[in-house]
Image (cartoon, rainbow, N blue to C red; front, side, top):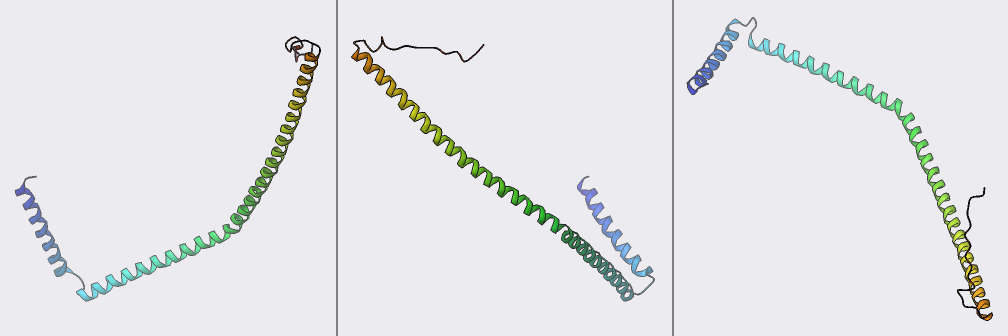
Length: 147
């Protein structure tokens, strides 16, 4: 649309609005004050209806929330109890595992010490018998399969 067409459109719109207002004022069935009062009453009725609907909706929502809340609270408490129990079990398992690792570590250390003592005693015996350390060492391979 060019500038001349746009100006013509705007002027036509303004002229149409003026003609519409003039026709409305001249052809109105009631005086302006009465029309405004009717419009205000209609708006007040619509506002009151909207407020009533809002209040009813808010009341229904609050009732639903209050009816669901005890169940949610009970479920939440139950879940918290389960989580606490799981934490206690994890602590017990951690302590038990720690004790088992400590005991096994002690057993392994004792076994290593015993083997070292036996190796040293065998080396001492071999040295006393006049053998070199390598001659007294015997290697035995044990197969885990028993057929």
